[in-house]
Image (spheres, helix red, strand yellow):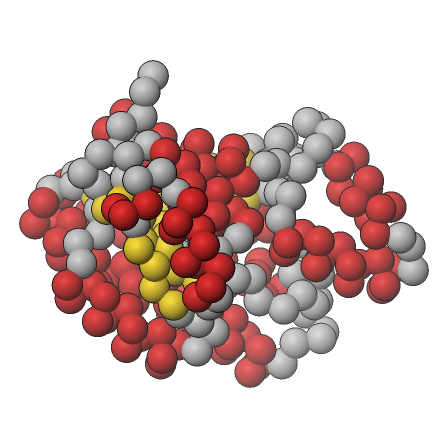
Length: 259
């Protein structure tokens, strides 16, 4: 099966590294015109130059953690640019358990993970409805089904994103627009390395031991690669996936124990 996204315009959050970058690369490989969003402009420029048909792609410098600034930039972008494929992906909130976070921490996480996602989506929906075609894909976590104690902010707010996405899928299904959430497992990214570094300190063991323990929890016995994530997103963005809507799809090597 060949995935052909020629003529489609994609907007991908958090795409200067990790999973977001893997998604952006694969969408570009599939023929989509991609706009990358992240904080590091020099990194974004470098990536755009390396994508196939680089002149078809662009970038937008944003900081999802500063909602009011982000709001202005994304509203300006969507006034003049069509978005057929929206990949809602941001950096993760700080790690920590429920006893280590105060109400301000939850508000910051809400703005980062929920408010930015809902607002961005609301801006692209009208054109998708007009065109009777659209793909909205939310990058979330396996922790919405099986909470990870050291990621209480992510557990809480990403669960809200999944529930909201399911509700939205019902409202938009008749318009040829699909809304799906991806439950992300352990991937070989900078984010995992940062979290493992914190774990190694708190548990007083080496980072290698933390990594090996993590791999042992996955039936596939390894971390996922960002390009594998990109394959899934490209498929969901295609016409081949038009009947997949309102789904919460794990990509975790079998990590989740529930079904």
